[in-house]
Image (cartoon, rainbow, N blue to C red; front, side, top):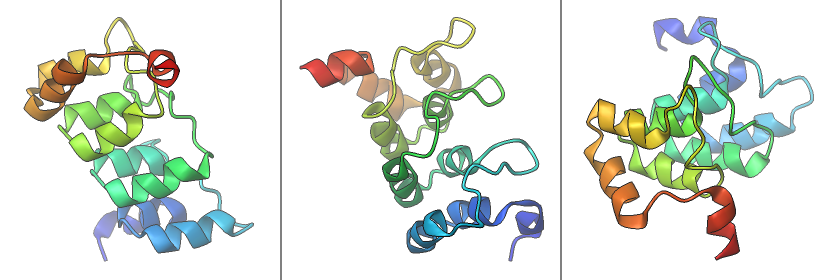
Length: 138
């Protein structure tokens, strides 16, 4: 067990450990709060994206319980995935959030460029950044 696990709510810990079957079970449990935040203020979906846990992210996105445009520490989920050059999580999120969403004038592409996230920048350059509304209307 990692030393930080005692400081994470149970749901965040299961998400961080990339346990999709356990996450599904916990999502249905009445006394488990999937929106509980860990000590840094991040909830399970931010923990999953920051740690590049694509399987767990799939479960969390399917639940529909999370604000995918949320801002944590000046970053959206898409920005966190872009910063870590996490193409698997980035692709999952692009299907659900507005790629052009800005915080303080920055988009996920700005964050990817600053971080030197080659794979995410290449993906965005190839596909072209479009808003969620444009993607769903084509």
